[in-house]
Image (cartoon, rainbow, N blue to C red; front, side, top):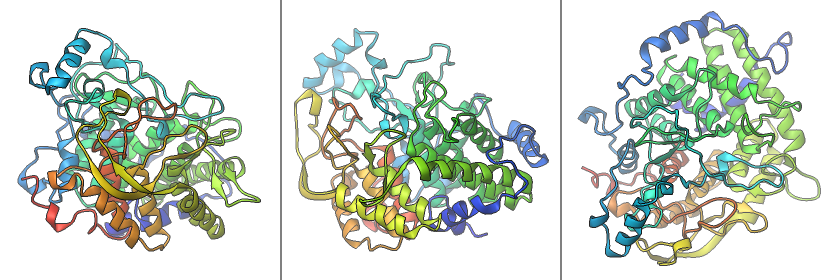
Length: 501
Protein backbone atom coordinates (compact mmCIF):
# COMPACT_ATOMS: atom_id res chain seq x y z
CA UNK A 1 0.00 0.00 0.00
CA UNK A 2 1.36 3.43 -0.91
CA UNK A 3 2.44 5.97 1.69
CA UNK A 4 -0.35 8.38 0.75
CA UNK A 5 -2.92 5.65 1.33
CA UNK A 6 -1.61 4.96 4.81
CA UNK A 7 -2.06 8.38 6.37
CA UNK A 8 -4.10 8.00 9.52
CA UNK A 9 -6.00 11.25 9.19
CA UNK A 10 -6.50 11.20 5.44
CA UNK A 11 -9.60 10.04 3.64
CA UNK A 12 -7.90 6.84 2.46
CA UNK A 13 -6.74 5.60 5.85
CA UNK A 14 -10.02 6.41 7.53
CA UNK A 15 -11.75 4.30 4.90
CA UNK A 16 -9.51 1.40 5.86
CA UNK A 17 -9.87 2.15 9.56
CA UNK A 18 -13.63 1.82 9.66
CA UNK A 19 -13.71 -1.00 7.12
CA UNK A 20 -11.44 -2.90 9.52
CA UNK A 21 -14.30 -3.14 11.99
CA UNK A 22 -15.77 -5.85 9.77
CA UNK A 23 -12.67 -8.04 9.91
CA UNK A 24 -13.74 -10.04 12.96
CA UNK A 25 -14.63 -13.70 12.58
CA UNK A 26 -17.84 -15.03 14.06
CA UNK A 27 -15.88 -17.26 16.42
CA UNK A 28 -14.04 -14.38 18.09
CA UNK A 29 -15.62 -13.37 21.42
CA UNK A 30 -17.06 -9.85 21.34
CA UNK A 31 -15.05 -7.25 23.24
CA UNK A 32 -12.34 -9.76 24.11
CA UNK A 33 -9.11 -8.35 25.49
CA UNK A 34 -6.04 -10.29 24.34
CA UNK A 35 -4.40 -11.97 27.30
CA UNK A 36 -1.67 -13.87 25.47
CA UNK A 37 0.18 -11.95 22.77
CA UNK A 38 0.49 -13.58 19.38
CA UNK A 39 3.84 -14.31 17.77
CA UNK A 40 3.55 -11.02 15.87
CA UNK A 41 3.01 -9.04 19.07
CA UNK A 42 5.73 -10.93 20.91
CA UNK A 43 8.20 -10.26 18.11
CA UNK A 44 7.26 -6.59 18.01
CA UNK A 45 7.72 -6.28 21.77
CA UNK A 46 11.13 -7.92 21.55
CA UNK A 47 12.03 -5.47 18.78
CA UNK A 48 10.70 -2.57 20.84
CA UNK A 49 12.95 -3.42 23.78
CA UNK A 50 15.95 -3.12 21.47
CA UNK A 51 14.92 -0.09 19.40
CA UNK A 52 12.89 2.11 21.75
CA UNK A 53 14.98 3.91 24.34
CA UNK A 54 13.04 4.18 27.57
CA UNK A 55 14.40 7.09 29.57
CA UNK A 56 17.93 6.19 28.50
CA UNK A 57 18.81 9.70 27.35
CA UNK A 58 18.92 8.74 23.68
CA UNK A 59 15.60 10.28 22.66
CA UNK A 60 16.61 12.92 20.13
CA UNK A 61 15.05 16.38 19.81
CA UNK A 62 13.00 17.10 16.71
CA UNK A 63 15.06 20.29 16.25
CA UNK A 64 17.78 20.80 15.33
CA UNK A 65 18.12 17.91 12.93
CA UNK A 66 20.50 17.31 10.06
CA UNK A 67 19.84 19.43 7.00
CA UNK A 68 18.50 16.40 5.16
CA UNK A 69 15.86 15.78 7.82
CA UNK A 70 14.74 19.33 8.60
CA UNK A 71 11.16 20.18 7.62
CA UNK A 72 10.90 22.34 4.54
CA UNK A 73 7.55 24.02 5.31
CA UNK A 74 7.31 26.83 7.82
CA UNK A 75 4.56 25.25 9.91
CA UNK A 76 6.39 21.91 10.23
CA UNK A 77 9.58 23.76 11.20
CA UNK A 78 7.66 25.67 13.87
CA UNK A 79 6.24 22.43 15.25
CA UNK A 80 9.74 20.91 15.37
CA UNK A 81 11.10 23.96 17.17
CA UNK A 82 8.39 23.60 19.82
CA UNK A 83 9.80 20.25 20.93
CA UNK A 84 11.70 20.28 24.21
CA UNK A 85 11.97 22.77 27.09
CA UNK A 86 12.47 26.50 26.86
CA UNK A 87 14.34 28.44 29.52
CA UNK A 88 12.10 31.15 30.99
CA UNK A 89 13.16 34.73 30.32
CA UNK A 90 14.67 36.28 33.45
CA UNK A 91 12.40 38.64 35.35
CA UNK A 92 14.81 41.53 34.80
CA UNK A 93 14.64 41.05 31.01
CA UNK A 94 10.88 40.99 30.73
CA UNK A 95 8.73 43.95 29.69
CA UNK A 96 8.32 46.46 32.51
CA UNK A 97 4.65 45.62 33.10
CA UNK A 98 5.55 41.94 33.64
CA UNK A 99 8.58 42.27 35.95
CA UNK A 100 6.75 42.78 39.24
CA UNK A 101 4.35 39.95 38.50
CA UNK A 102 7.30 37.71 37.61
CA UNK A 103 9.13 38.42 40.88
CA UNK A 104 5.98 37.88 42.91
CA UNK A 105 5.33 34.53 41.27
CA UNK A 106 8.92 33.41 41.66
CA UNK A 107 8.48 33.93 45.39
CA UNK A 108 5.57 31.51 45.44
CA UNK A 109 6.45 27.81 45.31
CA UNK A 110 2.96 26.90 44.16
CA UNK A 111 2.56 29.06 41.07
CA UNK A 112 3.90 26.53 38.58
CA UNK A 113 1.41 23.83 39.52
CA UNK A 114 -1.76 25.81 38.79
CA UNK A 115 -2.58 24.27 35.42
CA UNK A 116 -5.95 23.92 33.74
CA UNK A 117 -6.56 20.71 31.82
CA UNK A 118 -7.92 20.86 28.30
CA UNK A 119 -11.48 19.63 28.53
CA UNK A 120 -11.82 18.34 24.96
CA UNK A 121 -9.61 15.38 25.81
CA UNK A 122 -9.87 15.53 29.59
CA UNK A 123 -13.34 14.91 30.78
CA UNK A 124 -17.08 15.10 30.59
CA UNK A 125 -19.98 13.62 32.46
CA UNK A 126 -23.08 14.84 34.26
CA UNK A 127 -22.45 17.54 36.80
CA UNK A 128 -18.69 17.33 36.47
CA UNK A 129 -16.48 20.38 36.37
CA UNK A 130 -14.88 20.38 32.96
CA UNK A 131 -11.53 21.62 34.16
CA UNK A 132 -9.16 19.79 36.44
CA UNK A 133 -6.09 21.18 38.22
CA UNK A 134 -3.03 19.11 37.40
CA UNK A 135 -1.48 17.53 40.49
CA UNK A 136 2.25 17.02 39.97
CA UNK A 137 3.53 13.58 40.81
CA UNK A 138 6.72 13.98 42.90
CA UNK A 139 7.81 10.40 42.21
CA UNK A 140 8.06 11.07 38.44
CA UNK A 141 11.77 10.95 37.51
CA UNK A 142 13.11 14.44 36.82
CA UNK A 143 14.74 15.42 33.54
CA UNK A 144 13.85 17.31 30.40
CA UNK A 145 11.57 15.69 27.84
CA UNK A 146 11.42 15.91 24.06
CA UNK A 147 7.69 16.48 23.82
CA UNK A 148 6.05 19.41 22.07
CA UNK A 149 5.30 22.49 24.16
CA UNK A 150 1.60 23.10 23.74
CA UNK A 151 1.82 26.90 23.58
CA UNK A 152 4.08 29.66 22.27
CA UNK A 153 3.43 32.23 25.00
CA UNK A 154 4.33 35.95 24.89
CA UNK A 155 6.75 36.71 27.69
CA UNK A 156 4.57 39.45 29.20
CA UNK A 157 1.51 37.22 29.52
CA UNK A 158 0.29 36.47 33.07
CA UNK A 159 0.22 32.75 32.19
CA UNK A 160 3.79 32.66 30.84
CA UNK A 161 5.41 30.99 33.87
CA UNK A 162 2.38 28.82 34.56
CA UNK A 163 2.19 27.13 31.16
CA UNK A 164 5.49 27.79 29.34
CA UNK A 165 6.89 24.24 29.45
CA UNK A 166 3.74 22.19 29.70
CA UNK A 167 3.00 19.60 27.04
CA UNK A 168 -0.35 17.88 26.69
CA UNK A 169 0.19 14.32 25.48
CA UNK A 170 -2.60 14.72 22.94
CA UNK A 171 -0.71 17.63 21.34
CA UNK A 172 2.47 15.58 20.90
CA UNK A 173 0.48 12.69 19.44
CA UNK A 174 -1.36 14.95 16.99
CA UNK A 175 1.91 16.66 16.02
CA UNK A 176 3.54 13.28 15.39
CA UNK A 177 0.59 12.32 13.20
CA UNK A 178 0.92 15.61 11.33
CA UNK A 179 4.64 14.97 10.73
CA UNK A 180 3.79 11.49 9.49
CA UNK A 181 1.08 12.81 7.15
CA UNK A 182 3.62 14.91 5.24
CA UNK A 183 6.36 12.26 5.23
CA UNK A 184 8.56 13.70 8.01
CA UNK A 185 9.58 10.32 9.41
CA UNK A 186 12.48 11.66 11.46
CA UNK A 187 10.45 14.24 13.36
CA UNK A 188 7.51 11.88 13.88
CA UNK A 189 9.81 9.14 15.16
CA UNK A 190 11.58 11.43 17.62
CA UNK A 191 8.29 12.50 19.20
CA UNK A 192 6.98 8.94 19.29
CA UNK A 193 10.20 7.62 20.83
CA UNK A 194 9.66 10.01 23.73
CA UNK A 195 6.01 9.03 24.09
CA UNK A 196 7.04 5.38 24.01
CA UNK A 197 9.63 6.03 26.71
CA UNK A 198 6.96 7.60 28.92
CA UNK A 199 4.36 4.89 28.36
CA UNK A 200 3.69 2.77 31.44
CA UNK A 201 3.90 -1.01 31.26
CA UNK A 202 0.11 -1.26 31.35
CA UNK A 203 -0.11 0.88 28.19
CA UNK A 204 -1.26 4.11 29.83
CA UNK A 205 0.47 7.45 29.52
CA UNK A 206 -0.03 10.53 31.66
CA UNK A 207 -2.24 13.32 30.42
CA UNK A 208 0.42 16.06 30.48
CA UNK A 209 4.10 16.62 31.25
CA UNK A 210 6.37 19.48 32.19
CA UNK A 211 9.08 19.13 29.55
CA UNK A 212 11.61 21.11 31.60
CA UNK A 213 11.40 19.05 34.82
CA UNK A 214 9.93 15.76 33.65
CA UNK A 215 7.09 16.05 36.18
CA UNK A 216 3.79 14.66 35.02
CA UNK A 217 0.12 15.15 35.64
CA UNK A 218 -1.58 12.94 38.16
CA UNK A 219 -4.28 11.93 35.68
CA UNK A 220 -4.61 9.46 32.82
CA UNK A 221 -7.31 10.18 30.26
CA UNK A 222 -8.54 7.76 27.61
CA UNK A 223 -8.53 10.34 24.80
CA UNK A 224 -4.82 10.97 25.12
CA UNK A 225 -4.04 7.25 25.27
CA UNK A 226 -6.20 6.66 22.19
CA UNK A 227 -4.55 9.36 20.11
CA UNK A 228 -1.11 8.11 21.14
CA UNK A 229 -2.15 4.66 19.85
CA UNK A 230 -3.35 6.28 16.63
CA UNK A 231 -0.01 8.06 16.21
CA UNK A 232 1.97 4.86 16.86
CA UNK A 233 0.00 2.82 14.33
CA UNK A 234 -0.08 5.61 11.77
CA UNK A 235 3.72 5.82 11.79
CA UNK A 236 4.12 2.06 11.33
CA UNK A 237 1.50 1.91 8.60
CA UNK A 238 2.86 4.88 6.69
CA UNK A 239 6.51 3.90 6.81
CA UNK A 240 6.09 0.13 6.53
CA UNK A 241 7.35 -0.71 10.00
CA UNK A 242 6.29 -2.53 13.19
CA UNK A 243 8.43 -0.35 15.41
CA UNK A 244 5.58 0.87 17.57
CA UNK A 245 3.28 -2.14 17.31
CA UNK A 246 3.93 -3.09 20.91
CA UNK A 247 3.21 0.47 22.11
CA UNK A 248 -0.03 0.65 20.12
CA UNK A 249 -1.09 -2.78 21.38
CA UNK A 250 -0.44 -1.89 25.00
CA UNK A 251 -2.37 1.37 24.60
CA UNK A 252 -5.27 -0.49 22.99
CA UNK A 253 -5.32 -3.08 25.77
CA UNK A 254 -5.36 -0.29 28.35
CA UNK A 255 -8.32 1.37 26.64
CA UNK A 256 -10.21 -1.93 26.69
CA UNK A 257 -9.50 -2.26 30.41
CA UNK A 258 -11.45 0.97 30.94
CA UNK A 259 -14.71 -0.34 29.47
CA UNK A 260 -17.79 -0.15 31.64
CA UNK A 261 -20.74 -2.53 31.75
CA UNK A 262 -22.18 -0.98 28.59
CA UNK A 263 -18.98 -1.65 26.64
CA UNK A 264 -17.97 2.02 26.45
CA UNK A 265 -14.55 3.33 27.48
CA UNK A 266 -14.53 5.40 30.67
CA UNK A 267 -12.63 8.68 30.76
CA UNK A 268 -9.89 7.23 32.98
CA UNK A 269 -9.15 4.75 35.76
CA UNK A 270 -10.36 7.12 38.48
CA UNK A 271 -13.68 8.22 36.94
CA UNK A 272 -16.99 6.73 35.83
CA UNK A 273 -17.97 9.34 33.21
CA UNK A 274 -17.86 8.48 29.52
CA UNK A 275 -16.75 10.87 26.76
CA UNK A 276 -18.05 10.52 23.19
CA UNK A 277 -14.79 11.80 21.76
CA UNK A 278 -12.74 9.33 23.79
CA UNK A 279 -14.81 6.46 22.45
CA UNK A 280 -14.68 7.57 18.81
CA UNK A 281 -10.91 7.94 19.09
CA UNK A 282 -10.74 4.50 20.73
CA UNK A 283 -12.66 2.99 17.80
CA UNK A 284 -10.22 4.58 15.35
CA UNK A 285 -7.22 3.36 17.37
CA UNK A 286 -8.55 -0.21 17.65
CA UNK A 287 -9.61 -0.35 14.00
CA UNK A 288 -6.25 0.88 12.74
CA UNK A 289 -4.45 -1.62 14.94
CA UNK A 290 -6.69 -4.40 13.64
CA UNK A 291 -5.81 -3.41 10.10
CA UNK A 292 -2.10 -3.49 10.88
CA UNK A 293 -2.40 -6.99 12.31
CA UNK A 294 -4.41 -8.04 9.27
CA UNK A 295 -1.71 -6.72 6.97
CA UNK A 296 0.86 -8.63 9.03
CA UNK A 297 -1.09 -11.85 8.49
CA UNK A 298 -2.22 -12.05 12.12
CA UNK A 299 -5.93 -12.74 11.68
CA UNK A 300 -6.55 -13.66 15.33
CA UNK A 301 -5.40 -10.35 16.83
CA UNK A 302 -7.00 -8.45 13.95
CA UNK A 303 -10.33 -10.09 14.78
CA UNK A 304 -9.99 -9.41 18.50
CA UNK A 305 -9.36 -5.69 18.10
CA UNK A 306 -11.92 -5.18 15.35
CA UNK A 307 -14.53 -6.99 17.45
CA UNK A 308 -13.70 -4.67 20.34
CA UNK A 309 -14.06 -1.63 18.07
CA UNK A 310 -17.40 -2.94 16.87
CA UNK A 311 -18.64 -3.37 20.43
CA UNK A 312 -17.68 0.18 21.38
CA UNK A 313 -19.35 1.46 18.20
CA UNK A 314 -22.63 -0.12 19.23
CA UNK A 315 -22.45 1.72 22.53
CA UNK A 316 -21.67 5.00 20.77
CA UNK A 317 -24.64 4.64 18.45
CA UNK A 318 -27.08 3.65 21.19
CA UNK A 319 -26.03 6.02 23.99
CA UNK A 320 -24.16 8.99 22.57
CA UNK A 321 -25.91 9.83 19.31
CA UNK A 322 -28.84 12.25 19.54
CA UNK A 323 -31.46 11.93 16.79
CA UNK A 324 -35.20 12.07 16.28
CA UNK A 325 -37.06 15.35 15.80
CA UNK A 326 -33.85 17.34 15.27
CA UNK A 327 -30.72 17.00 13.18
CA UNK A 328 -28.55 14.15 14.44
CA UNK A 329 -25.51 15.09 16.52
CA UNK A 330 -23.31 13.72 19.29
CA UNK A 331 -23.56 14.79 22.91
CA UNK A 332 -20.41 15.23 24.99
CA UNK A 333 -20.88 12.04 26.95
CA UNK A 334 -23.31 9.68 28.63
CA UNK A 335 -26.04 11.78 30.30
CA UNK A 336 -24.10 14.94 29.34
CA UNK A 337 -25.97 17.04 26.79
CA UNK A 338 -23.31 19.68 26.17
CA UNK A 339 -22.37 19.49 22.48
CA UNK A 340 -18.67 19.86 21.48
CA UNK A 341 -17.55 20.86 17.98
CA UNK A 342 -14.63 18.42 17.70
CA UNK A 343 -16.91 15.49 18.48
CA UNK A 344 -19.17 16.50 15.58
CA UNK A 345 -16.18 16.76 13.22
CA UNK A 346 -15.02 13.27 14.14
CA UNK A 347 -18.61 12.05 14.27
CA UNK A 348 -19.25 12.94 10.63
CA UNK A 349 -16.33 10.74 9.56
CA UNK A 350 -17.33 8.02 12.01
CA UNK A 351 -20.88 7.75 10.66
CA UNK A 352 -19.83 8.07 7.01
CA UNK A 353 -17.55 5.06 7.30
CA UNK A 354 -20.14 3.10 9.19
CA UNK A 355 -22.19 3.52 6.03
CA UNK A 356 -24.67 5.89 7.62
CA UNK A 357 -24.44 8.75 5.10
CA UNK A 358 -27.76 10.32 6.08
CA UNK A 359 -26.71 10.58 9.73
CA UNK A 360 -23.28 11.88 8.70
CA UNK A 361 -24.95 14.57 6.58
CA UNK A 362 -27.23 15.58 9.45
CA UNK A 363 -24.29 15.91 11.86
CA UNK A 364 -22.40 18.03 9.32
CA UNK A 365 -25.45 20.29 8.81
CA UNK A 366 -25.95 20.52 12.58
CA UNK A 367 -22.35 21.71 13.02
CA UNK A 368 -22.71 24.25 10.24
CA UNK A 369 -25.96 25.63 11.62
CA UNK A 370 -24.94 25.78 15.28
CA UNK A 371 -21.18 26.28 15.55
CA UNK A 372 -20.27 28.61 12.67
CA UNK A 373 -19.52 32.21 13.71
CA UNK A 374 -18.29 35.27 11.84
CA UNK A 375 -17.56 38.97 12.23
CA UNK A 376 -14.81 38.35 14.79
CA UNK A 377 -11.74 40.48 15.47
CA UNK A 378 -8.65 40.14 17.67
CA UNK A 379 -8.44 42.93 20.22
CA UNK A 380 -5.88 43.89 22.84
CA UNK A 381 -6.75 43.54 26.52
CA UNK A 382 -4.85 44.38 29.70
CA UNK A 383 -7.31 42.57 31.97
CA UNK A 384 -5.76 39.50 33.58
CA UNK A 385 -8.70 37.21 32.75
CA UNK A 386 -8.64 38.20 29.06
CA UNK A 387 -5.02 39.30 28.68
CA UNK A 388 -3.64 39.83 25.18
CA UNK A 389 -1.21 42.64 24.45
CA UNK A 390 0.59 40.98 21.52
CA UNK A 391 -1.81 40.22 18.69
CA UNK A 392 -4.36 42.56 17.15
CA UNK A 393 -6.30 42.34 13.86
CA UNK A 394 -9.63 43.84 12.76
CA UNK A 395 -10.79 40.84 10.70
CA UNK A 396 -13.60 40.18 10.19
CA UNK A 397 -12.75 36.53 10.86
CA UNK A 398 -15.03 33.52 10.66
CA UNK A 399 -14.76 29.95 11.88
CA UNK A 400 -16.32 27.77 14.56
CA UNK A 401 -16.97 27.94 18.31
CA UNK A 402 -15.93 24.98 20.52
CA UNK A 403 -19.16 24.19 22.41
CA UNK A 404 -22.92 24.59 22.51
CA UNK A 405 -24.53 24.90 25.91
CA UNK A 406 -25.12 27.21 28.84
CA UNK A 407 -22.05 29.26 29.87
CA UNK A 408 -19.86 27.66 27.21
CA UNK A 409 -16.90 29.77 25.99
CA UNK A 410 -17.67 32.25 23.21
CA UNK A 411 -14.49 32.11 21.13
CA UNK A 412 -13.45 31.47 17.57
CA UNK A 413 -11.43 28.26 17.94
CA UNK A 414 -8.88 27.56 15.21
CA UNK A 415 -8.12 23.94 16.16
CA UNK A 416 -11.78 22.99 15.81
CA UNK A 417 -12.09 25.12 12.68
CA UNK A 418 -9.24 23.15 11.10
CA UNK A 419 -10.92 19.90 12.12
CA UNK A 420 -14.08 21.06 10.35
CA UNK A 421 -11.98 21.89 7.28
CA UNK A 422 -10.66 18.34 7.31
CA UNK A 423 -14.15 16.93 7.68
CA UNK A 424 -15.52 19.15 4.91
CA UNK A 425 -12.82 17.94 2.55
CA UNK A 426 -13.21 14.31 3.58
CA UNK A 427 -16.92 14.28 2.82
CA UNK A 428 -16.53 16.14 -0.45
CA UNK A 429 -17.82 19.55 0.59
CA UNK A 430 -16.28 22.70 -0.94
CA UNK A 431 -13.60 24.30 1.24
CA UNK A 432 -12.79 27.47 -0.74
CA UNK A 433 -14.62 29.86 1.59
CA UNK A 434 -13.31 28.17 4.72
CA UNK A 435 -9.77 28.11 3.32
CA UNK A 436 -9.90 31.83 2.64
CA UNK A 437 -11.10 32.51 6.18
CA UNK A 438 -8.43 30.28 7.73
CA UNK A 439 -5.73 31.87 5.59
CA UNK A 440 -6.80 35.34 6.69
CA UNK A 441 -6.66 34.20 10.32
CA UNK A 442 -3.25 32.62 9.88
CA UNK A 443 -1.90 35.77 8.22
CA UNK A 444 -1.85 37.36 11.69
CA UNK A 445 1.07 35.12 12.74
CA UNK A 446 2.35 33.62 9.49
CA UNK A 447 4.77 36.49 8.66
CA UNK A 448 6.66 35.61 11.86
CA UNK A 449 6.78 31.92 10.90
CA UNK A 450 4.37 30.98 13.68
CA UNK A 451 1.45 28.60 13.94
CA UNK A 452 -2.10 29.99 13.91
CA UNK A 453 -3.48 31.57 17.06
CA UNK A 454 -5.59 29.25 19.17
CA UNK A 455 -8.50 31.65 19.71
CA UNK A 456 -9.70 35.19 19.02
CA UNK A 457 -9.81 36.13 22.70
CA UNK A 458 -8.46 34.99 26.06
CA UNK A 459 -10.78 33.22 28.47
CA UNK A 460 -9.30 31.90 31.73
CA UNK A 461 -12.34 31.79 34.02
CA UNK A 462 -14.71 29.54 32.08
CA UNK A 463 -15.71 26.16 33.60
CA UNK A 464 -15.11 24.37 30.30
CA UNK A 465 -11.61 25.32 29.27
CA UNK A 466 -8.97 28.01 28.93
CA UNK A 467 -8.45 29.77 25.60
CA UNK A 468 -5.60 32.11 24.73
CA UNK A 469 -4.51 34.36 21.89
CA UNK A 470 -1.28 32.42 21.36
CA UNK A 471 0.08 30.16 18.62
CA UNK A 472 -0.70 26.61 19.75
CA UNK A 473 0.73 23.21 18.82
CA UNK A 474 -2.74 21.72 18.34
CA UNK A 475 -3.71 24.52 15.93
CA UNK A 476 -0.47 24.04 13.99
CA UNK A 477 -0.79 20.26 13.80
CA UNK A 478 -4.41 20.39 12.71
CA UNK A 479 -3.52 23.04 10.14
CA UNK A 480 -1.30 20.40 8.53
CA UNK A 481 -3.77 17.55 8.98
CA UNK A 482 -6.74 19.49 7.69
CA UNK A 483 -4.98 19.82 4.36
CA UNK A 484 -3.64 16.25 4.39
CA UNK A 485 -7.06 14.81 3.53
CA UNK A 486 -6.93 16.33 0.08
CA UNK A 487 -4.09 18.79 -0.35
CA UNK A 488 -1.49 20.64 1.70
CA UNK A 489 -0.93 23.71 -0.45
CA UNK A 490 -3.07 26.07 1.59
CA UNK A 491 -1.41 24.96 4.82
CA UNK A 492 2.07 25.83 3.61
CA UNK A 493 1.94 28.63 1.03
CA UNK A 494 5.15 29.45 -0.86
CA UNK A 495 5.48 32.83 0.85
CA UNK A 496 5.99 31.09 4.22
CA UNK A 497 8.67 28.61 3.20
CA UNK A 498 11.76 30.71 3.89
CA UNK A 499 10.77 32.35 7.17
CA UNK A 500 12.60 29.96 9.52
CA UNK A 501 16.09 29.49 8.12
